[in-house]
Length: 316
Image (cartoon, helix red, strand yellow):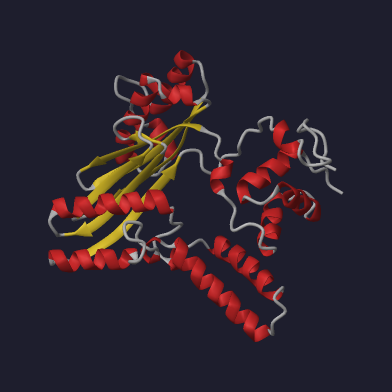
């Protein structure tokens, strides 16, 4: 049997919201495989989904910049939140977001681009590390643009103009009044920050993600004991619900929680008398997908028999 550490139990609990004993059992049943354990919990109805936020540990800032019909977002990580409040670091992130308007999604090209005052972005980052005294990294960048319309930015938990923990860009293609488009774009950006859609449409959801969800839905349906044809309908129903809830255009608009985002856009297009398309969007959340550091959680594990304080020791 694989060694199950308290650290693994804690991570699984944070990522799924399941109880500690259920997490311990899931890891035992799946030989300690974290991803398989998540799916095991979900098939048992003990976890709604893997909580990506549970893996967030990286500090730093998201920076966004908009110029004309183009917008860019970048993520620059640091070791501590203290650095994210540093004026030199904030200035660097703000400058890098502006530079990304020209370099786009290519992080290597961004690193090699010229930085204001001389040298490259990568060299400026190295200088930051030396002068601030903490490791930092340029993690990712994205750019959106329209031929006619607006690109609107929004930051949540703002640390300064164009800087925050969550950064969103919305690209609205339309010949309608730009001020009205800006208003709609800001509302859509706030929705995206809150609802965290995984794709623009259901058809654009990643194939690997869809297959994983289908596998979970199939296992849960089979456990109902119903006939195969009913199981198939249950699976298709679950997948339709998954696509609806995770694709931006089919999500319910957070402003009223009853109108689909696609219908909100269509209604505004009709009101303004112009065609309108939500061409693309970007949502960066600081540290998403980066493994969380292990903390001492003796108070939690002490309540569960067999789980020891030392995270290096096996559970049970």
